[in-house]
Length: 76
Image (tube, rainbow, N blue to C red; front, side, top):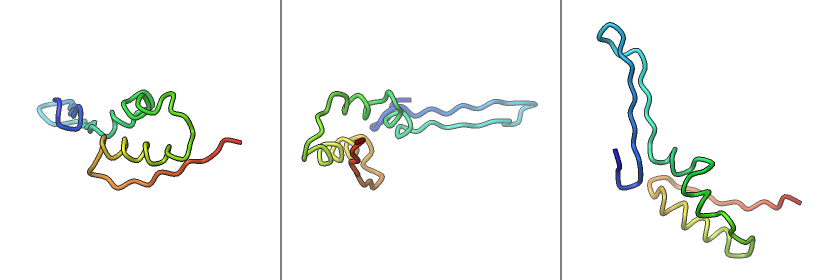
């Protein structure tokens, strides 16, 4: 089902009329996946002084329910 923050999915498997397996994928899992909206939104973003702020805004827009801290680390 589509929700305000993205897709919410529930899967279950029944065996002998009993739940044998149950899984859930919340919007956060889709939004922060390696190829999800966060990665797409940051693709091609230049590393500059405003990167942490822009990243923080995007993270907050995708998942305002969870507090976050953005740390930028040089790969050099």
